[in-house]
Length: 436
Image 1 (cartoon, one colour):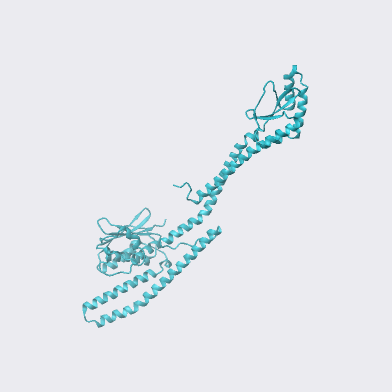
Image 2 (cartoon, rainbow, N blue to C red):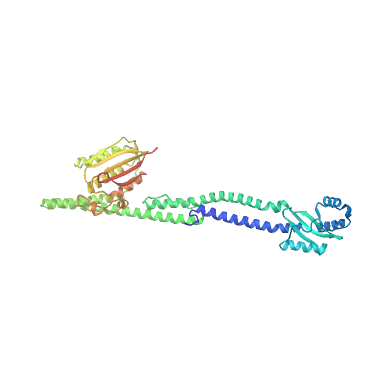
């Protein structure tokens, strides 16, 4: 399992936090190094002059009144004075080039016996000097704020910066990921056979270039679809006239009734297939929506099959009127009934219902059923059923009926699926949204 986030926002946040954390660590280290330089800067020429004056004053201290005079000098110079006889050593030796340089400067100015030490617990820097025959430790206060609070302030500052960067990363991540999410949805729509709206060609140049290429590809696909529709419609339309003449000639010239009936049936099957080509090539999206009763459209289609002697039964439930393309929905019903009659076994039972704000149309048969792995394949154009689910009339079929049903269902914002039926058979289900 990798710890690297998969999302763009997660990677951006992790990168920014890492950069800020490194910056804060570097800042703390720099502040720590600058502490010695800051202390050294305090001991400029003025401090050296003060130490020389203090040494002169200490040389004049009366041993009998030493403690009193040392307290007075401490108040006058704002320092802490400790006699070496009272405390031979104090603090720790200085480290680092900056403090060593300071000690060298003080020795040059005050003598070789000058020594610099630091007492972190007392927050003081001590300078050892000799006044007369006595040695003294002179303590100067360390800069508390800069030495003690710098790490805390650096961490606080880093926390504030990280918070601001997270907010900025969230806004920037959403700004970058929004067109990527749009592209992902559009690709999914194309994969489902739908036609998405063109993507905006704005934003960062790389994303704009990707969207521009996707829109070009989408336009090419649309043109290919239009060209295919025109080709199918043209070929199908041109074939119907010679088929009509061929049927007329067969009926007039052939005396063998059985032979004539078989030839007429073949011609009718060819005409039916051509009709499916025309239906598939037809652009139903250009048809206007009309508020209709779905039960009425389905009932009219069922009546046509009943007059032909087909065992088709319709059990409607009360439905609200909804916007439909009546001709396309009628063609959807006809294709579902034709499919049930051709591949299933009667009776074909049709029901409508309303569930969770959606209208459901079920067309059920008692045929061999459809394997779950074949459902999506059968909804593709020019796809025929496997041998286990062959047409009952022996005809081959064009493989367009279910593709037309799926396209019309999606055109109305719905979905189409093939489900196994309890007791055997297939349940063709179309689900349509009910407008609020």
